[in-house]
Image 1 (cartoon, rainbow, N blue to C red):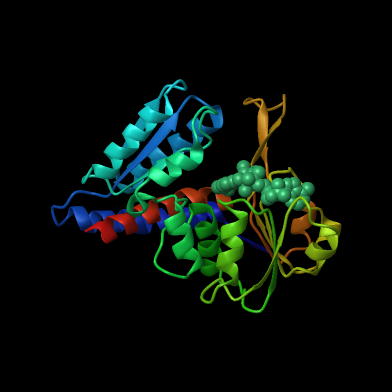
Image 2 (cartoon, helix red, strand yellow; image 1 turned 60 degrees about the vertical axis):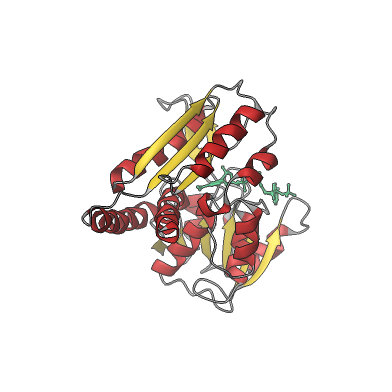
Length: 291
Ligand code: NDP
C-alpha cells in the first residue's frame, strides 16, 4: 500500500517555491504577495488563515492579513475588494469562506478580479478551467491532481467515483480528472446526497475521491481490493480525551480501508497540506502572469 503523503509532498513543493522566490528576489525584484481577508472570528477559519500566512512567510512571500469585524457590512467588504483589485503590489488574494450570513458570498466572489483570484472560485476561472484554458484551479482539487501526478498514480481509463459535488472540491475534481492530460482521462462518476446505491458505485471504482464531510463514511465493504482512495474530508469530532477537545476525522474509515487500498491519503497529512501548498503555487503563477 502506498501512503500518499500530502505533508511530505507539500513540503517538497514549498521548497521548490522558496527557491523560485529566491531567484526572483536575487534579481532585486519584490517577492510574490498574497493577501487574505477574514471577516469575523470563526475558529476554523482563523486556523486556516493562520496556516496560510505562516506558509507565505516560510516560502518568502509577502503576506497581508486583513481581519475585519463580524459586523462588517457588505459595502465595506466590497470597498476592501476594490482596493485589493487596484493594488499593483499585490499578486493575489483570498476571501476566507464562510462569510457572515448578512454578506452575499456570490456578490463578493464576483467582485474579485479574476487575475488575482488565486482561490479559483470566480466563474471566469472556473469556466476557463472547464474549457481547459489557462486558469487558477481551486487549491484543493489542484492539490489532488498534483499528488496523483507526483506519485504517478495511473488515472487514464480508470473509473473514478467522486462523492460530493461542491463548487470548491467535488465538481472541479470531477472535471479535472475527466479532462485530457496528467492525472486525467478517467471515466468519472459524480455521486451526491441523492445518489442511490452508492455502495455499488464505490465498490466498482478504481479511484474514489471522498468529499462529503461525514466522518468515516467510506468503510471497507464499500471498496474493492486495490482501489486508490483520496480523502478530502476534514471534520472536527468532539473528543474529551484530546487536549483540544476534538480530533480531526476524514470521510474514510482509514484503518480498515487502507488494508484494501493500493494507495490512500491520510487525514490529517493528506489533501489538507496540499491545499495550502497549491494556494502558494497559484500565487506564484499570478506573480508571473502579472509581470
Ligand atoms: P459541501 O458540504 O459543500 O458538499 C458536500 C457534498 O457531499 C454535497 O455535494 C452533498 O450532496 C454530498 N453529500 C452529503 N451527504 C452525502 C451522502 N450521504 N452521500 C453522498 N453524498 C453526500 O462540502 P465541501 O465540498 O466544501 O467539503 C467536503 C469535505 O471536505 C468537508 O469535510 C470539508 O471540511 C473538507 N474540505 C477539505 C479541504 C482540504 O483542504 N482538505 C478543502 C475543502 C473542504 P448534495 O450536493 O446533494 O447536498
